Amino acid sequence: MREAIGGTWLTQIIIIFMLIFVAFLALTLNYTKAFKMKNDILTIIEEREGITVNKDGKLNGSIGLINNYLEKNGYSLLRACPEGSYGVSNLHSEALNYIDKGHNAKRYYYCIAKYSAPSTNYKGKVYYQVMISLKFNLPILGDLFTFEVSGNTEDIVLPADTLKTK
View 1 (cartoon, helix red, strand yellow):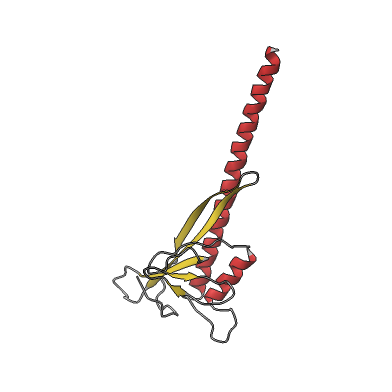
View 2 (cartoon, one colour):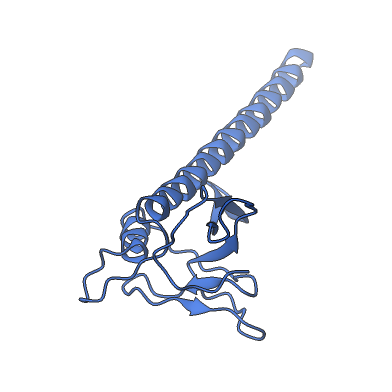
């Protein structure tokens, strides 16, 4: 009888450690996906030298490329954007919404802010900050919590946009 109870406890401990390992693995994979998406978005902005919008209706400006990228990766999480930044509320258009007081509802797929770069050589340098959110998802438990990832581009000397800087 003693060996049967000991075997049950050992089995439960092994199951608990396996669940902890699977949760850690899932967290690592989700976080890696979030950072890859953030880095790809920053690369698109750097390659296009700012936030560009195409005028002929095709989605081939930087916002259109980012929207296509997020849509192909199944990104569908809405978030709130900080005041003074720009939010994208529709992945099928290149419309940017400026976030001012009172318009910070959780209805934006991602946020972009433009900052003046701290430079003494050239005062027109800017950099962009991109903020996205992803959910931590476990197979059995479902969505547990949402985490946010943000990153900055390299300095851009002559940006190709007219967005307001913070």
